[in-house]
Image (cartoon, rainbow, N blue to C red; front, side, top):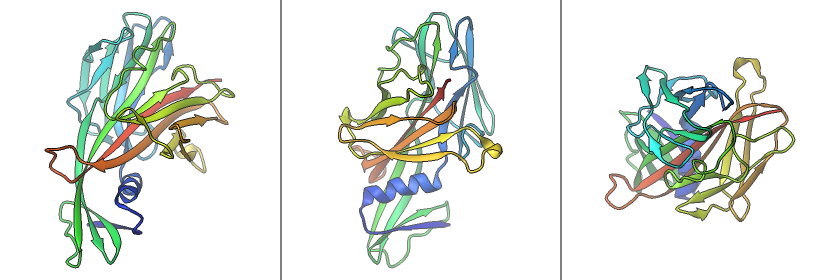
Length: 265
């Protein structure tokens, strides 16, 4: 059993912190972000703490591709292993493709209010403290995306909404260059999330010490503008918790969306 404690700052902040501290982040990682002549792409999907080092395979019934014209199709092949799912898709036409886990429901957990502090309780054998005065149940909902462009960049797949919590690029996600930065908006149900926290990690593995990790907040319009000191592959993640939809099995739903992108020279 694992119990995490939080101050009585509120339910939403406790859930967000809990997800960030305890959960792995799902990602989609392609063998190429931009190509001129490639006829297919291979994508890995996994949960990990260290970006793009597979640990736990992402199980989803909603894996799909958004084509450059905005239409949807399934992956051509999907192979599920214990630590990673390997997917392959054709690149038949020029433009930007979006590869996604789709919307997937994850684990359920509980939080208990004990002596004015919220305690997040995890584990199959976890028991709620007997002196808890309130108990809230929660479930995660995640989406992981990546964009790949063949030839000229297009916007139809980029602007296609998937899920409730959106990372909406203003800079094209396959045109992020060192010295120019990356601008995007954070939206929930179409509305900007002012002050929303974002976590950014860079691929580095055991060879980068200390590991690159940043936390920034959106401005009042839900906009985030990032700059980078090195080229490389990056993982962007944000989480937001609200009351669960009507008919849900839990009191609360914690939404997490991630985006893999490349910063080029």
